[in-house]
Image 1 (cartoon, helix red, strand yellow):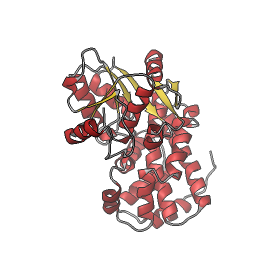
Image 2: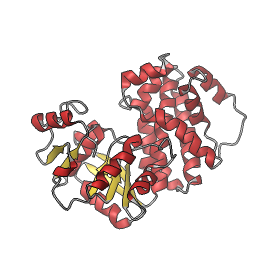
Image 3: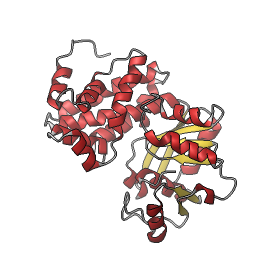
Length: 322
């Protein structure tokens, strides 16, 4: 569910593993064009959709008996997507969205369970992956977190193929926090590079950013080994260092002097923009300090310039590394 770049890429992955896949999208014009041209020209131009991917715009057209969906809509739309899926008999969810819901400050699996009910099966898919490379069949790996080991293994089996290797864990909190916060930190990395601060600054920011992810994640019940894995360090490094990342490109634009709204219009959906304020609010609830994320949030609110945010970070009170 979600016919953007990542949803389309995951649909292709599942067909390579030998499955018939129904790819739902809200935009009926896009779905119609994909059905005719066998290409998602809006998000993954040049990638041919296998015949075993069937785009649909109405879940009522699904054959009976389908009870599992992979949700690949943006985080802030997850609640509505899960509710729609539940209306059509879906009771188990693999979630590929990353972020924290603005109004409730819930992590992605918490959003799903609040809508679908505590007894529902839920997993989180997260890791260092750009959709186009996955769709092209280049080797990739990701983490699948599920509280029910059987459901986690089911999702692993559904996606595992020659070019796609999933790993399973039961640390939903750790995987959810890593996926959410890394987008905010990627904006920070982009800002630093847009300001021309150099490789030293980028490396320091990534390292201290990982410390912020771990602080929040462990306070919420996550485990340190998760933050050192694919969905933590792996995803953070990818998103902070490669210009395929919209969050990084957005930060680059800010560092080079572009206004927030102009950068958003030029780049499109930037998940870290909505997530920044939510991350700080959730961290405040548990008494966790996240100075890099906080400066990103201040910059997005227009309370300081990117250069002033860097100055604020560098002049903080000195302390121990850990």
